[in-house]
Image (cartoon, rainbow, N blue to C red; front, side, top):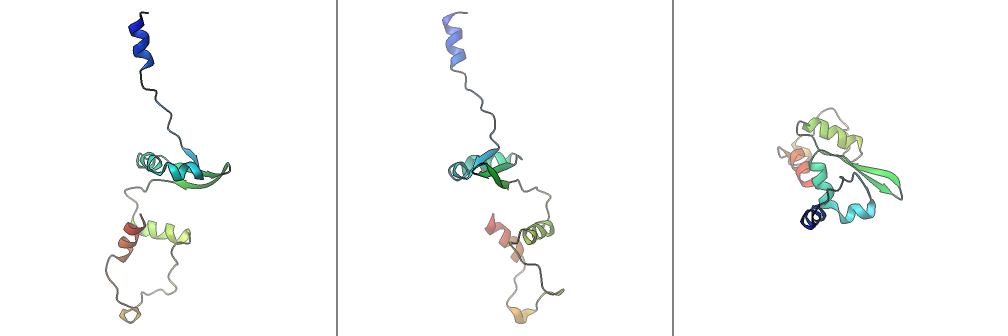
Length: 107
């Protein structure tokens, strides 16, 4: 092997394996990197002192509003309706698409 071959081999970029677990500290400083990985369909685990506390997962394209609503209710972010019927105009002005706007603003 000549000197030219050795130099070209040492300059080759090293491919790092994709990291799938981050501490809270790392996640705060590498959020953009984490979101790039999640956009590619991978799941990321967040740990607090080595204990898993959260996961960041991609939202599937085919996930409908009803499923997202059910997930948010299950997570305690939204409250389930207390009555079977929706409130009428007397409860306040209702605008179509409120749930979609909520999800967009939240994401």
